[in-house]
Length: 380
Length: 44
Image (cartoon, each protein chain N blue to C red):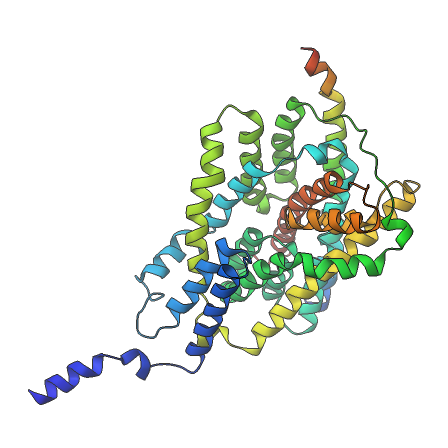
C-alpha cells in the first residue's frame, strides 16, 4: 500500500525529474519572446503564440510534440504540408496594393536587388559547411518574409524551422533599427536630398485586375516550384482588386489570417524543443539571418544608386532599402530617413512601390531558388 | 556537385534570375498601363 502511494506520488513532479538542462533555458527564451511581444510590441501576433509554444514544448513528458500530441497534430496539419504559410499569403495578397508599383514599374527592379542578400548568404552558409538545403533555408531568412521562410524551411530543412522562423520575424521587426545606419553609410547627403516627382498617371482598375493574373501565369511558367507562393499572394490580390468577392477578401484579410497566424505561431514555437534547438548551429543561423538582411539593404541601396546614375539623378537611393519584403516597415523607414534631410521630400509612395516589389521579389526569389534546386536534382 | 559549385550557381542563377524575372514583370506593367490606360477607363 505504502509502495503504491509512493509510486503514485512519483508521477507528480515527473516533469522536474525528467528535465533536460536546455528546457528551463528555452522556457526563459519563450518568456523573453512573450515579453518582447506583450511589453515591447515586437510582432506580438507572432511572438506571443511562438513564445507560448516554446514554453509548452519544453515541459517534459507532456508529449505535445509526440505523434498524436495536440501541437504535433497542428504542425502536421498546416506546417509540415506548407498549408498555413500559403493561407497567410492569400491574406497578404488581399492586403497589398500594387498601385504605387504599377505607377512606376521601373522600381520593381529594386524588389529584385533587395533579395540579393538571400543568395549571397547561401554562399556564405555553404562556406561554413552547412549542407546545401540547410544553406538555402538559412539564406531565405533574407527574404524578410516569414511565410516564405517557413514554406521553404518546413519543406527542405524542417529541423531548422524554429531558428529560421524566429530569426525571420525578429529581424523583420528590427528593420527600423538595422536599415538606417546602412542607408546613411552608403549614400551621400546630396543623394538623400533628391526629390522624387510623382507625376506618373495612376494605374487603371483593369490593369490592377489583369496584373495578378498575368504575373501568376508568367511567373508560374518560369519557376513552377514556387507557384503555390506566387499563386496564393496573387489570388488574394485579385480578389481585392476585382471587388466582386468582398466577403472572401475580408475573410482572407481577417478571420483566416488571424486563425492561421495563431496556429502557425504556436506550432513554430513547438519546434523550439531545448535539446534540439540549443546548439551552436542556432547562433550561427541567427547571425547569418542578420547578415542576410544587412546584405539585402546594401544591395538595394547600391542598386538604387545605379538607377539614380542611369536616370540622371531622378531616383533617391534611399528607396532602395525598401526593396525588401518587410511591408510596410521598410517603406516607413525610407520616408522617415528622407524627411530627416528634406522635410518636404515625400518618398513614401515610391518606397511603398519598392516595398510591394520586394514582396513579389521575395516570392520570386524563393520560387527561382526552388526551381534551381529541382533543376540540379537536389529536390524532387 | 560540391558546395562551391552549388554556391556559385545559386548566386548567379538566383540573383540573375530574380532580376530578369522582375524586369520582365516591369515590362508587362508598362504594357498593361499602355493597353489599359487610366483616362480611357474614367471616360467610360
